Image (tube, rainbow, N blue to C red):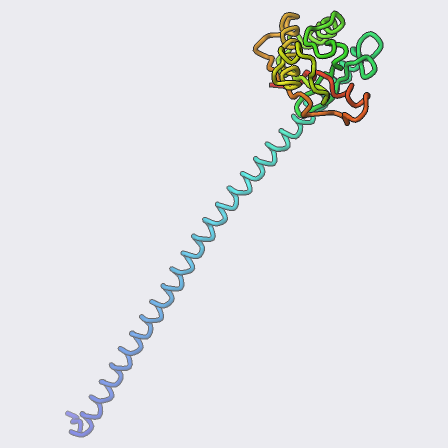
Length: 239
């Protein structure tokens, strides 16, 4: 039987111990590297999930934006269509009310486009005497023609009275209109509204207002300017 020298056995044990230690050290290092790699993979997975959520949110935002664009384009198309129909309506009325006989600028009735509709501008001389609110026969006939153009439709109608800046001085007129031109313009608007209703316009469609001299169309420094300011406007707007 071979014998290991006493000193050789100790050396062999030291070598085995060193090898075992090296193996443990290597295993711990590998475990640490695996742990580090797991952390990297987990971090990347979280980043991927966050990116996915952002992509989903962006896609929803794009879809909402496209839907809004489609909606606005639809509204724009509807608006353009409404404007075209409004223009056709105004042209139709202008032909019907053009002077002579029907009105028009020279005949005392003008049709003008406004936001959301149009209006009849009726010169005061057609409707009333100076300082009066009783309708003239010519005024009643003109309003009947306007009412005929507005019957059977759904637009809202607002009647607004206006005067020039000449103050009321006659005692009997001042007694009827203690608030001056503002009072007179409102009374005139009420008379016009009543005439339209009696001519067949539904009362629920009609409202009134009086502005006196406070919304002039022209300068009150000339007779022509005063004439333009003495008027009743009948505003017609879609519901």
